[in-house]
Each structure stands twice: as structure tokens, then as C-alpha cells.
Image: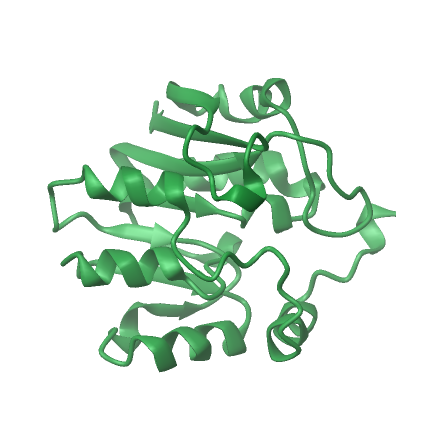
Length: 197
């Protein structure tokens, strides 16, 4: 069943065109905002894959982080972001499949992209994030910690499963339940901070 799912560019673009985005918080995620607020180096090169409406990127940009790149397969999602943040550099808006992105980043922020991927790609995601990070780079964000859909996104999961995907590539600095999730996601998220091996 999973192999036959249509999670193509057209699928995601139609979701944004129809505002069929139930996962969208409409603002920066609480756990990620708390993480951003303690960052001091404004020169960090940051990637947000599968960024969607990219509220995290908007918040980073407002806080003076100018080396932020957002990637999505949906032109509509990128256009929505550019409408909200018109001064954001076009060269840092990547209309791309995550697995085709090249470059080296200090930080990758994960917010609802992992759960939108076909679960068959989770191991490949762990390897790709590792490859995209600079030496000692970090993968930071939130993952669902509960069962969700099995035949359409968002796909859920649990800590033991995630540890299996990421352990070959990362040191686990933090992997624990979020204490500051948005109310709609209370008791269903894990915050993680992984450092590249």
C-alpha cells in the first residue's frame, strides 16, 4: 500500500492550493522556537526541508539569521512563504526534492517533514541529513511520538523506531518528550537534538 501512495509534487501542491494542511500550526512550533531562542551564532547555515509554510524560517529570519534555506517540492508553499516574507532571498528558496539537495549545513531543522515522507524513506532520510551536515552539524526538531495514519501522511512513530534509524549516523544529545508543545500536539511529540557522527 505504501509504495503506491501518491506523495508527488502535484499531491503536495494541491494540498497547499486547497488549504488542506491540517498539520500546519500557523506559527513557529513551541519546541523549535525555544531552541532557536538559545542560538547565538547568527551566521549558522540552516536548512529546513519540507518546510511548507515555513514559520520556523520566518521566525529565524526575523531574529537575524540570514543564512537560512528552505526547501519544498510545492511551489505554492514557497510562494505562500515569499508573500509573508518578501525580503527573504529568492536564492535561499529551494524548489527541490529533499533527496536531491546538495551542500553543507551547520543545522537542519525538522518540523513535520519526516512524518510526511513515505515511511519507506525514513532510513534514507537519516542518511541524507547526515550527508548534508557539516562536521559536528546538528539535526534538531520534533517527531511525533504516537501512532497516526498508516496509508497517508502524517505517519506516526515511536522513540525506539527513530533510534534505529538515526543511531548509525548521529550522537543523541537529546531525545525526550516535549514539555512545550502547542496544545493541539501536547503529549504527542519528542524533541530531539542529534549531532553528526
